[in-house]
Image 1 (cartoon, helix red, strand yellow):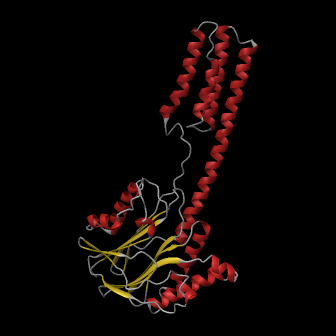
Image 2 (cartoon, helix red, strand yellow):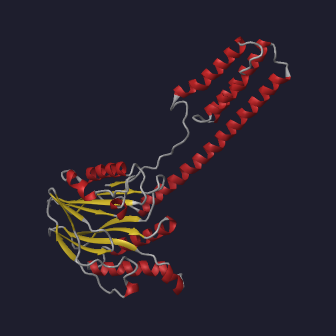
Image 3 (tube, rainbow, N blue to C red):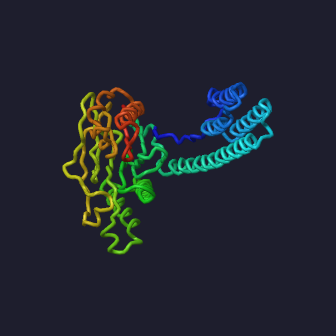
Length: 373
């Protein structure tokens, strides 16, 4: 299961959504009309009618705004008739000005609604692109129960530089990748797509985890540097921190290679332990550039019932308003008995509460529990 933020079309409110709000401009029109008719001849409240369409534009569409404008103009005409001033230049000017303001409010509604429709289409395209780039993780793979969580730093965005993927091998094992591409924006998305594509194409074919790491580093470095000159490559490197894992179905261990990425955490009952390798390799994309020709695999116990947590630095570096980092290692043990999907839901809510719904960096988490086969 993969949990992602929903792309929601936040259009302007409509009467069906908030019928109580329609009462406000209607009450204003009636009140101004009654008071103006009953007030002394030297008191004129008719100009206040312009507030009716102006208020309506804040929560309704063009049709209701136009209706309020028509009612406001009709009220001004009624006031002029009842007070015997309809033929005066002052009242006619007020009617013309009210009509003009109402027309401007309706035009503003039309433009706003058009922009909202365009934004909705853009978000729909982003959601489709996300489903292709960051595919939902399988709920089960071999003897593993898996769930993924992705939180973009930008509220309306669906794509970023954080990534994860899962692949099955012919040797009855599951391979996983979690990574964080340097930078942000379209360049980071492009590099994330490159790394994910290279992993999906090779994860099931490469015989060993070190060979897979070498392949990813070479593919990433070649594609990001083939169009650049030597000077550009030295001053503007592209790379990605990553963790590669291989989890055999019938062997209670996890093999991993860490490439400059935060170490995974394994939760055994109520005890949380970081899987810190003896040596962390350079990020993907920098290994070959610095002469790295091999990668060391570290092996750790991973038994039935244990839960493995992979994450990007956007989680542990998330700060609250006081500047305190999110205490991931302290929070996770309290959810030890939850299944991976529920654990990530609780983690997401707790993390967003910690940062008050404002992340400074994309965040991704993958939770894996080993089940009995």
